[in-house]
Image (cartoon, rainbow, N blue to C red; front, side, top):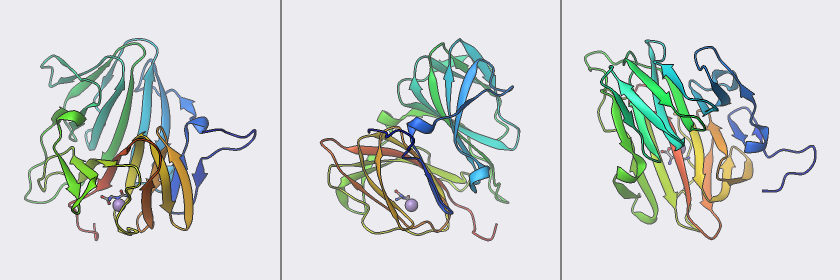
Length: 248
Ligand code: UGY
Ligand code: MN
């Protein structure tokens, strides 16, 4: 999408944010040696999670997150492998992913020129429910089902059902012209990355043209709706806090 001098499509409001590629700000952090990080969504916005891109120039090895933090990693480019509990590196294919529960010993092996999308949040355990096990799989392997009976809007659930999981991560695939069936409002929040195509996202009382590479934060009770526009499908990955009482 064309950017006009001095303008950006990124937008920040009380209950939502759109972060377009032109405003990516790279930082380095001591726990991510050899990496450039772009923090798309953080608690500074009002979110209860972080959502960030990691790009490498050289090969590097990243340790596990803090013991109370769960991590989801999506392969975007280059050579990426996960070493779970020292069992040896398992390469992730394109759009491969790993869910690494809080306290799970692991290392990420990132080759030069690789890119991953990472989501981290503090795990909310539930009394009497064992914590979830790690998941390593890929988007193409996840079963697709029509959302609410609409086969022009396909849904893939990347994490298994089970009360141990306090999040859902799904992929939603819209045929051109397909849309969410109604304007959603819910107490859960979202982190979203548009993987392919584009369309119009309604967030609160604003309507945004969005395209692949855009990230969106939707806070609790952010009215939200999406319609896909363009020659091909629009597809996004979407995080949601899940399976936990709103009272906390
Ligand atoms: O799962 C969801 O809440 C999803 N349908 N929301 C969205 O796509 N904005
Ligand atoms: Mn929603």
